[in-house]
Length: 181
Image 1 (cartoon, rainbow, N blue to C red):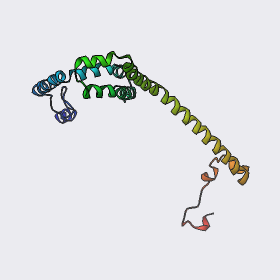
Image 2 (tube, helix red, strand yellow):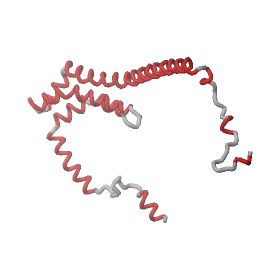
Image 3 (cartoon, rainbow, N blue to C red):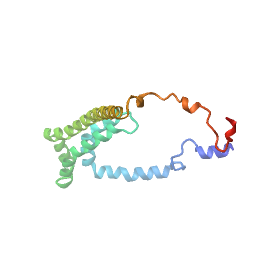
Image 4 (tube, one colour):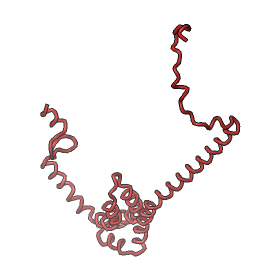
């Protein structure tokens, strides 16, 4: 029984697939990624600096679904994308990446897009709660109007609370003799 439970729960150090991460796989991943970093060094430098607001949003956001990081990250990336394409299509070099980052207008667009993401993250819940509050108050007033119409149509006896007294009376069972009464 204990062996089955430990198999079902898994042991410490195992990944979600149930296998331990192998040292060979980690070394292979490192061997593959490190050369790519050097090949794409201008992109790594540009994105590393341009996406700092996204990193901050991910670090600040403690919610389970990370909506702040997603919102700020998407808009921050969209602000950096035109300059990233310029880097890729014109001159993929470190000096060009640094030139793009040194331009104040470029930084204003990139950081302005991330600021818009922060604003969207902060304002959207307020707008949604306001709309839901308005909708519920509108629905409440409509239901009160319908209730008044029903009272006018059926009379005030409809509005009385049912105490269930009629349900408590002993009812006749089906098939019982009529002589019992």
